Length: 60
Image (cartoon, rainbow, N blue to C red; front, side):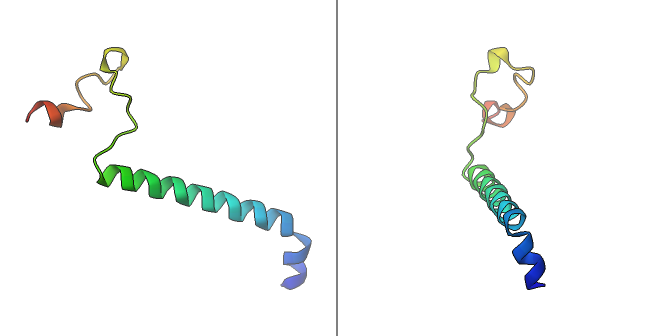
């Protein structure tokens, strides 16, 4: 097992870094969702979903 890891250390490190990056992105997205923030720029005039994604705010 150690021989396989040592012969593929570059691949193992790249995969570990990619997994860490994906984890951090997902965590950030979940935190933003819980805080009520959106990735939307709120420029609904040029959006195909205009009036749909902010419905809950308009009904208040």
